[in-house]
Length: 508
Image (tube, rainbow, N blue to C red; front, side, top):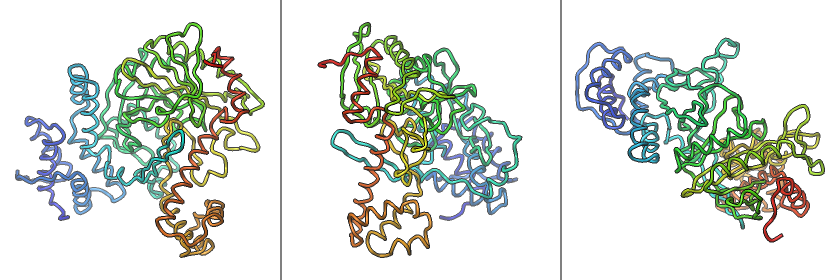
């Protein structure tokens, strides 16, 4: 690619903003002058320069910035994000357009507008996201979706060192705070000049919505409390989730549990996640169906899913919310020590992961039962991924994995390429770990696979072997998180809990 000169680059930026980012003709001179200042350019000539490829445009911005010594190399992303933020309509303009579409066309069209804007201004980096590996793992009764995440950039150690001893930074308080809107960024807080948000009320409180820059699934949205308040699951949570799907019925929405191990990575700021994707749990068949007095207009079921999940379907949102709150109250204090279930010690251990979606006029509420207790045998969590599976995933099994979409670390691609060489007999395990010490975490897996399949497999066969291994491991991880295992003993303890909730199994 030919590096553009500053004048040609500014022409391309103006042209791109006009075509992709709703730049009004009355704002072109104003934006041009802002760009001239940003690129330290005194003279300017208008031309018909164009660049429609966004990745090439970003590369041009960064190469010109380096060539003209406008920024240090480690700050290139900060610089290009700032430029794209300048090209993007102001937050007020975006919100006005969004709600005009929401009220006069449809919520789906409004979301489509905001999503496309965030792709076109490089907030959602599709070219990086397309690097992710993705496949479906089919099993007899259900399926899982698995992705190896290669798009989320790793932190630079040199840059991290800048903030190692700085404890004074308290703005924004976290990467979810509203104050990130337009923020230039720092090592532990990415640049957000090009992010755009939309505000609304949930349960009478101020919330806002943004798209995830990493997009783990289709139109992945993050729904965030406007105040920096801790995660919690209570009666109001179910109201908020139902309010959201009333606003955006084409999206599902769910909340991580509010406890570590079984929750998400950010527990100090209340937020939900949602989107357009059909999560695997939504396709799960029912294992038991129930009736309950006072909830005759609710279809209540326990799913034939890998973890412990109840589903309630009803057109009556008040009944859905009331019943969910009743279950939450019982579960928060429910104990069954025979299966290691203790609700609280010095701290709370029981939790619920709730998800809501709308199908026609019916609310579908999913309640996944969780517990984060540890013991000597399972120091990382009794109902968490057990140690033999940590080579694949050790992190919290949060909302997205609990619904059947596994986000696995990018390290696996490189590590499994080395494992392939071993299973094809091109290198021994002992030789491999000399050049790739990270393979030690897979020692037991490699020994198991060599014992079962040998070391003379074709490349195609090895790919199938490793994919099957990952598929089976992810399924077993979800089964680890189940409170009530899919066994006769687990079934017996499940029935005791269902009885405590007042549910009567249809047909015995």
